[in-house]
Length: 308
Image (cartoon, rainbow, N blue to C red):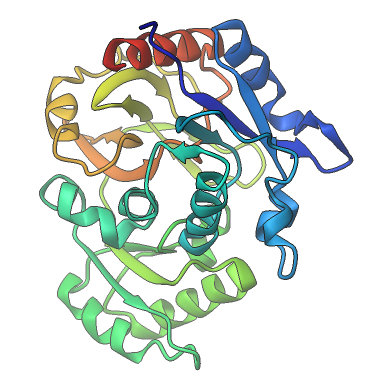
């Protein structure tokens, strides 16, 4: 029996439902060129309040249960779980379950896979009244070390000095002010709670051309079925002068990650060693502009056929 590639699910163009979202057009074309069949969903319907069930309305049901990989914008775990169930009704099964998605999408959930390989991290779910007292109390563990803050998924790193970086964690006024600014900036898009992490000195790259945020030597590794698809420069600005890292220890670590498709973001420290920044679900992790998209989908196809 001939092995079948999983389908690829992309977001449709919100202004033309018959076309792919323009931001994913290059991936869409490359996926088809490498043998994948593609289907489209409505991101607006999926993330709306009253029309979720219409998100996959244009997808024709498969004759038998077929794996599908989503490549699109970020979803909350609740939205992803809804998409998972809606697709199952059409005989499509997303490559990651809702639990597997959250395992790598929310930093607190991924800590069990990377805790000894990543900066010291604390977190708290954000209560309805936005009370951050418990989190500030937990932050005492950092002493007077510098820290960075983010929600469970994203930071406001382009507001580096006011909503991301705190030079001294024991300066509770600055810490509280920065957390509140982060909450304000994230607004309705804030993911679940707040994370405070030890700031690690990383190898310098450049300053961001627009925000002035310091960019560091970081890399994104994609894994499918525990196998490395590719490693890419994380930033498109700055000159990566050093050779790419040896990935063997990250490939070993990947075997324990409870996900079928995920990313590991790493960075080179000042001392030359590498540290894991975070994991991400591979379906909503962006390919850097410097990535060879055709090579990515060629490798994804090759591994997909290899595992059947």
